[in-house]
Length: 254
Image 1 (tube, rainbow, N blue to C red):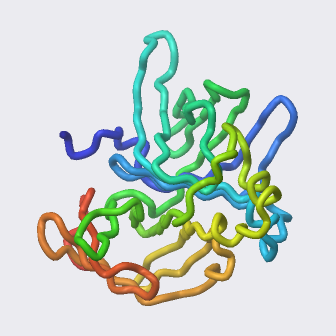
Image 2 (cartoon, rainbow, N blue to C red):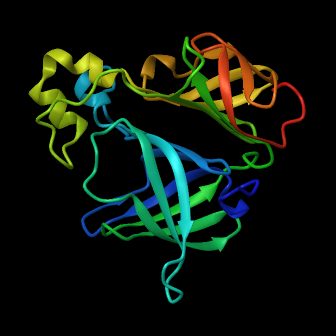
């Protein structure tokens, strides 16, 4: 495998500045897409939602997994497919894929393939160069679906929920639908973390999180490579040992 299956032009953290659909125009939802050489994480926090309540938190979106760039038709722009390993929302009935056109090195236009939408993404300064993807190890030393992703000076932590979806969950149900049908289990389905912020001078400051109580917190955080396959993470709330999936451009403890 090459050093990066995903072209370098995609690497970094992207802020969505526009979502246009036939029915609406959105420039206010807080969205960050972090892309490493293979792995991605995405968090979307709508404005105005009362995230102190289960219903408000259920309006958030977030997911993570691997990314695939293809060009199946030479007459069309290349296709970016976000292959979701974990998702705050229930499973979709269609792939998450869009045609991508770079307007400039730091601005890319996305046009939906399986839905009618147009999005504008702008890369954040300071989000290229170093990149890292780690998978948390369980007590048996096996990798889990929990991820730490680093792009430049930005760090994202993704931890899936521990509870399976109810058997009556239908394709394209929303988390709000599930919580409304089973309010007694809302806490279990909302126990899903994606936290994003800057890691600078050994301190990770969380800007936004699917767990709102974490927002604005600053915690000591260091990441060091123990050997070719293992990294050590020293930070409250994070596992101590992680499997190295990617480690590029990082030459000293972070």
